[in-house]
Image (cartoon, rainbow, N blue to C red; front, side, top):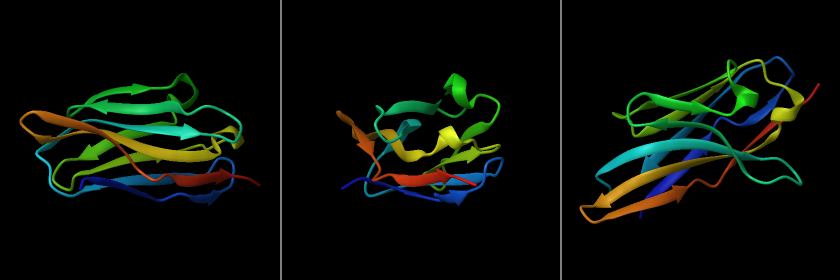
Length: 120
């Protein structure tokens, strides 16, 4: 069974930084797109950033210039570096990936989420 496990969330003051990690485990062939989404209390889940293949990236306008998405394919791990955090970045952050498990099957997999709280 393929799983994504996030880590790195926590409490940080405004202006601070955190780095989230998303590690894939299980039996699979490859990972194409990896993304980070977030859901704040009372709001819908939204895309934060996405990396397609090795280096094509997309960011939500709210995080451009502050967040950086990356991946290390040798470790099957994705990262989200978050700088200059703001109160409105408080949310549960979820990792998402399209994972090819066989020549005829690609799964969309979600992690369990990690809480990021920005507070003074």
